[in-house]
Length: 489
Image 1: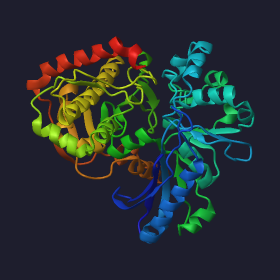
Image 2 (image 1 turned 30 degrees about the vertical axis):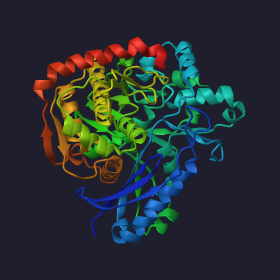
Image 3 (image 1 turned 180 degrees about the vertical axis):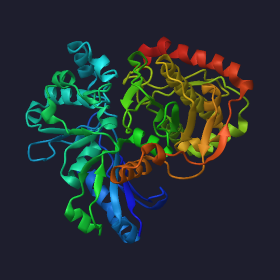
Image 4 (image 1 turned 135 degrees about the horizontal axis):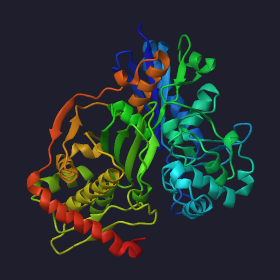
């Protein structure tokens, strides 16, 4: 039996495990749900780290029943995980409080304080201090829960916590570490100055490795539980977006993807560190050595259409389908998709969504079109600030649930003024990227040869006949936010 490799993707809603063979073919997968995050107060989002571990055990246990022979031959495990979550451990590795998640907005004041205390923060971190990042969360804990702060021995991101339980090592990869606001992203090392702003030092941090490097070895008792033979190494892995890039093959200069998921991401790989903090661009290390990436992030992509579906009593697919059937060009209504605040380009956790241009003619289909256009304009904002950082996107693949809508893809291609490739049906997400990283760590394979792009089902070209009218509509969209910022924040 040939060697196999396991990818584990830790999400807030559950965990997915995926097995591949040496050729990269998917041969088995399993999922397990986790308890939903809780929101003790408006704008807060927390989760018990034990939920990630129980879901991880459940997924691999399931594979041990359905794919026992393949699982027995696992040689490498890669991990992917939701970024920015603050998991606080004491000196005995006990969890001190529920993890504060990526979409928790409580630490806005601490972001301002951190930037005032360390004027070079943006230059070092390559990013604006945002409530989503890990460091401001710890600043909030220090100020509001000092007894807990004083007991912190280690701060781990979600997948690093799962890794600790898998192999007993405190280790983090560069891509996930870049989202903490403690990493000197250009140097790919912890920054003493950034750590000091939150009252921490290197002793509180995990050891850093590249995503393709060996980070540890699976505990013998877990290998026995899952029937694995021989030594099983665990790779550095990646944060969820970098792992998805590995899964879809976006690891070379200018290659990227647009993710139309609950949130939206415009991701592009770089050969050097290219920050643009003024545009709220995320400039992070990639999971591949000597590679970086940039992201424009919008917080409510398909989530905006799901929200409208709830209001209208329809489902999102119905709304998108009706909008597509009636589409003739940009509508009168304009939607600002800031239901959960916004990252790129506004960096405003308090921003809120808005419909403008409503009339007696406005109905669910017209509102659905406005939502899809508003999200497309938000991606156009991301492209604009990436361009301001000197970035050129050469190839863009579409992923996520929203990519099933031909109209939405056409809107995106037209507004971004570039061809978008839609892959053949398949799984190109974080679990596959993690498995590929596990393969590289176990075999020493060249990431460039492993991180290949999938076969393309279709290419969506811009509709040049709509370019001018969409440019005019985008200009109106851009003018709305500053005009009503105070009212919607």
